[in-house]
Length: 208
Image (tube, rainbow, N blue to C red):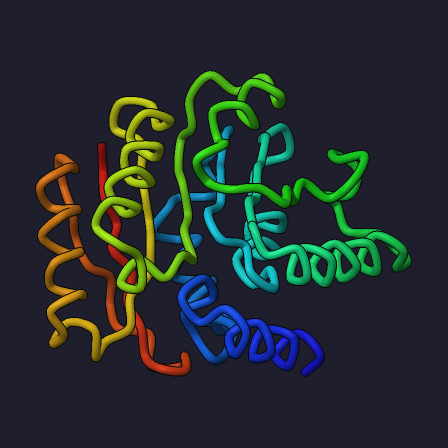
């Protein structure tokens, strides 16, 4: 409940950066992990970690030796997420992922700084990228820059997954973004609709 309140407060202050009134659901996180094949990834990045619904699912799903980078530019959300993950690590027994990281791999940074974060973590290419960014709220120019960051970072046949709300399919911004990813990726498909999310959502799974 605390995370949901923090998320809503950040939406009120920065609606174009947060882009939703509530965090994504566990059901959507489960579908995201499946579509991005996180269980098979050795290298994974997350764009827009928010309150960490996808982040926590990824940490639990990734193989033991995998390297993970979660990026969130909102400092308040980063603080809340790091505190949540630190509490998980303090539990007995601690989560398995806590043995792999000296501290939670959550960076208060912009997606455009991904190349530097990859270098810092000794990653040459990413197997997959998962995204919680509100693409439809971004300008054309920002969408182009961030999608190029993703394409440059992914290995050949790498996977980029991002979700969209069902009603967005009917809106010009949603249609435009769909056209944009179809023009940039070799293959794009939509997942099933996750009705157990507010609002209902689906995932674009894009292969480089």
